[in-house]
Length: 79
Image (cartoon, rainbow, N blue to C red; front, side, top):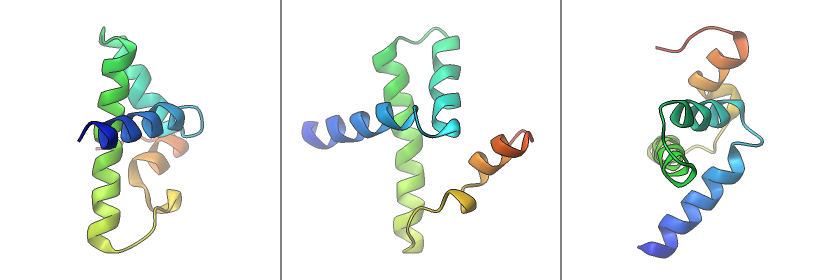
């Protein structure tokens, strides 16, 4: 579904400005030589994993429960 893909990519592109985890994923993709659209799609795929987990657990997104974000904020490398 093109509209859904566009919406998720728009969300991902905007999230990199407000979320350090998202910014890291995006910047890491750029560092690997990806262009902006590809890096945004990589970030969108990562967010879909988070959204899927929230859906399966029937919980709202909570940055305090997002392990990779918390590891980044505390300076510890996530596994």
